[in-house]
Length: 336
Image 1 (cartoon, rainbow, N blue to C red):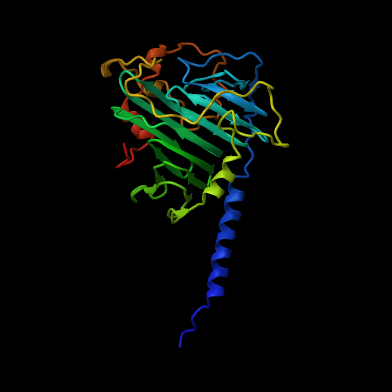
Image 2: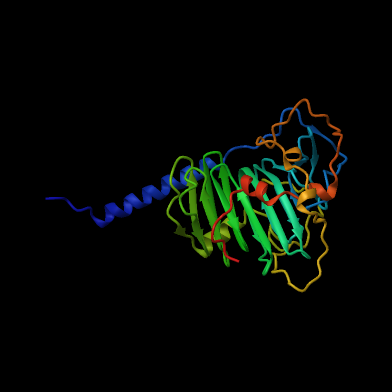
């Protein structure tokens, strides 16, 4: 005769499982971000290639920006522009908030490294394509929904997952072997497990959580409470009205606060200027000549710190759709 487990034992098992999961996640996000050994920090900021794709809003602590394959770093300040292929290093006890041309707001937490793989926004052509690679750390994303756009792609790639977005407020915590995604209100995401890409993506909606661990199936989607969500949000600087006081953080600028409200849905009839020039497909340059290799931030010592043959800014901003999809696989069934 089989002995049935008592309710108390079942509760203890569940609590033990949740505790183990919490320990794993805490360990997973504890990796410290270090600058490349041969990176030279310059005090005077130099623009990157092409036209700006975003701008720094708020900085606390030490945040370094590195342009594509150039062994020079620049301290981030309020108003500093961001460019395609830039890498952001948000170091220990530091935070930063910035806004892209499409109105998306991002806030990086302590010990986070992120690469702007691609950023295209053209309101007149109704086209958005923004791809980010998150090496490690934690970040909050506020992505406005762009209705009736011909193309609206926003994807974040971590070492274990790809998160596809349409209009959302969510957090990603990532490390080499684990990714955790938490959603807030009015959010729809699709999460692809890079270790089992043939399995259908996991769909997340409001106030939910999922974990994607290396060599494992994606975890079961679990709910989070509104109180838990609010507690997590305090790790990030997301708007000027937020209380950002933290004894472990030192503000780099007493005026480093800006009006970075939660993103609003773009008015379809509103005329919005764009920095992108659309050219015919037969005139698009080969992206292989423009894109960094897979090791986005592994500097090549042979690269001259003042590169020559700077590509035309308007062409550099355009990447053929098929090449983009090969880098960031398409996610089926994303909501419009």
